[in-house]
Image (cartoon, rainbow, N blue to C red; front, side):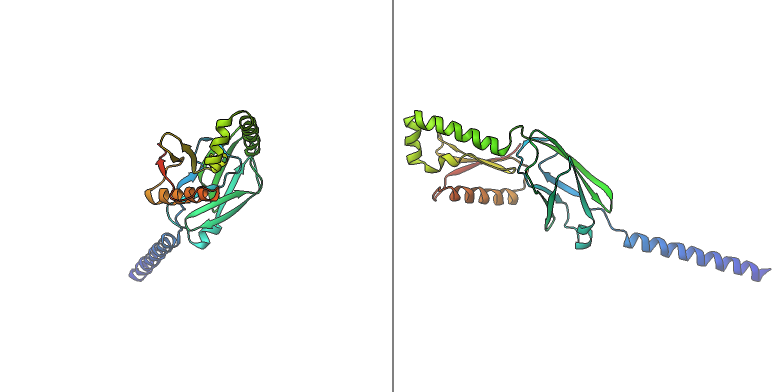
Length: 219
């Protein structure tokens, strides 16, 4: 009788230890889901340019295996390329997006939804904006001598504004400085990087150093 009781106790002990080991292995090997810190464009953003590069920033950089398990679904469907840069996933559509269209992007990890955001593109395509700008420029150029004088002293003016999803650059004649408006919420370090890119854009259109500028941050 005592021998049978001991066998039962030993069997229960073995099962209990096995369960504990199994739970321990499960919690040790279970992978935490990547957490999204922010996106560009932001959720609900409107008037997004059709040539936007979507950027998803995670709180921590996923390891290479986890990066391979992150999937993107875009509605309406578009062909796009994905590139990783540390903790940022960059989504580059193969073609420009449809104008005046609401897009929804779902981020999945191991086929499980972890984040959803949406944005709406501008009603005018980038090409339409460029064409309208050229028409206005041609009309104004031929009728206004003051504008022609302006171009002689500021030959880079016809290249303004310079705008992308992160910032917009215009010239403030009252301040005699370029105004760089940051359109997204960024840290001090990210702001510094964006300002450097903006100044490089100005140099590319012919602005010479030293460049006078000031920065307006997104609220």
